[in-house]
Length: 260
Image 1: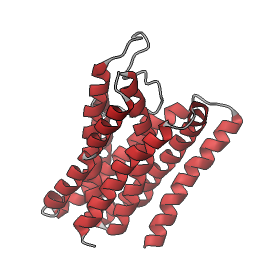
Image 2: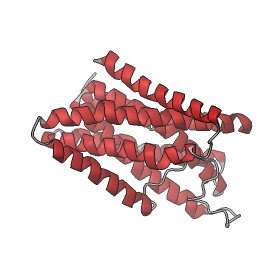
Image 3: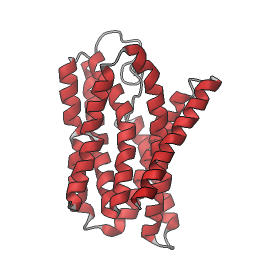
């Protein structure tokens, strides 16, 4: 396969298939969904952190040689601060629960179409950036692209479940929620194509793009996902969380090691 084909294939995996998986998840009995979602989030945390620290950052540092390690570190720091500001502007807001307090405040009991529209805009921007990151990873190394795509897919499914819930709560029918979420996910492909045409002409910038990608994965895991795990402090729940996070890291490690 050509490199562009790899990018398109795995952008679809990270975008469209996560929407389909989330839609399938939503048809499960509510009690089962409630039990599974925290486990999915824990696994996604491990996959994101594994991809950031075992895949993206090492490749970013290799790409700059031995002279610009501080510049890569600065790119990670800058990325974390940028994502914090974007989240403050509600452009990069993730929701991993069926009742999202950020998008749909509890004091508003009726449906809010604006919340659904905001979800679609924010998700479209987020998916577009995911496509850029997947494309940049593939341009660096096919194996890194696969690992990055797996991490994107792992965190997209819990997010898409939350997005579906907000759309339904905002008055969307199940069919409309699925179609609009699917269209929003296609921006991943657009981002991947743009990465193919743009980044190959600016190869020296790729290490810093990878550093920012790592920052986004770290930010999502640490700022958006881990706080939700602290709501369950029982010893048994904590053990399950640690084991699932470790499983996510292990998946990335084994995948990366096997592909290399």
